[in-house]
Image 1 (cartoon, rainbow, N blue to C red):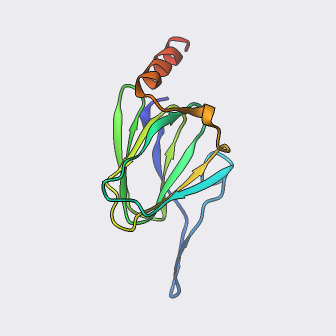
Image 2 (tube, rainbow, N blue to C red):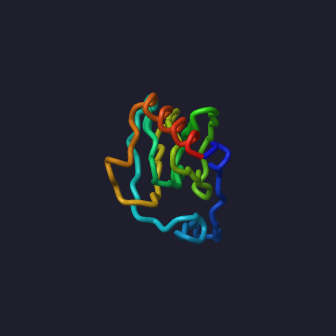
Length: 140
């Protein structure tokens, strides 16, 4: 799947004099039911996270606080997204290499995932990822 299939999604935002509220409903705002939620915090500014791809899992990544960059790679093209709003999330399809970096102090990243954790769904070696992408393109 091409990197163009990954995109920013505007999430509902409700504002009043008490503040703002945003929410995500699986199967409504995102094209999958939410099976797992995890978050990254206390991140050093120089931290780099990700550096892997998923064979089947889809994700929505949101910068709940602060900002950071997500670099997506489909094996041929790369695209960088800057996440800095809690009412927008980055939808990432399966088989995309992802790298998260450039965290601001106090950044919090929340990830909504389509599947429970499965270590066998991860591709942690970039050359293996490229081989898997090439193999899937040949079988299309």
